[in-house]
Length: 286
Image (tube, rainbow, N blue to C red):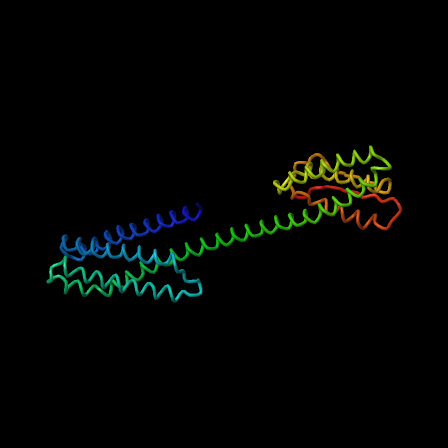
C-alpha cells in the first residue's frame, strides 16, 4: 500500500514537472520569437514542436531515473544524461521541423539550434537533478524506516527470548517448591499454585503487549515476588517504592523482573542469612 502510494505521488510529480516544462517552454519561446520579429504562426508552430519534444524528453528521462539513480558523488553522470537528452530533444525538434515548417524558414531556424541545445541542456539537467534529489530523499526515508523496523523486531526478539529463558527456569523452581509444600503445608502449596497460575496468565497477556504501564509491571512483579517468598520463606524480604505520579509511565513489559531474578539468584543462593531486595522506581525527564 505504501509503495503504491509512493509511486502515485512520484507519477503526479513527474506529470506536474512535464506540464510545467511544456507550458513554460512554449510561452517563453513564443514571446521571444515574436519579439525577435518572427511571424506569429511560425513562432507558435516552432514553439509548440520544441515544447512538446521537451515534455516527452522530460517524461522519458524522469521515468528512466526511477530505475537508476546516480549517487551524489556521480554528478558527472547527471551532466552526461543532460547532454544526451539535450542532443535528442534538439535533433528530434529539427527532424519534426521538416514536416510542419516551411523549408524557407528552416535555414533561419537552424541558426538558433546551438542556443536551443544549451537551453534544453539546462532545463533537462535541472529536471534530472530534481528527480535524483527526490529519489535519494525517498531512499533515505525508506532506509530509516527499514532500520527502525529492524530495530523494533530485534528488541521484540530479545524480549521474547528473555521470556522464554525466564519462564521455564522460574516455572521449574516454582513447581519444585509446590511439590515440597504439598506434604508439609498443603494450604501454602494450594496458595502458591494459585499465585503461579495468576503469574503465568499475566505473562501470556503481556506477550501481546510489548509496552505496558509501570503500575502493571509492578503488579506483575509483586506476583513473582510472592511466589519467591514462599520458596525462600523468611530469608527473603522485599520492598517496592514508587510514586503514583509515574504509575502511568510506559516501559517494555517484564523489563524489571530479570533484574529482580538476578538479585535473588546472586543474593540468596548459598546464603542462609536474611536478604532484603529493594526496588525503587523514579522518573527522569519523562
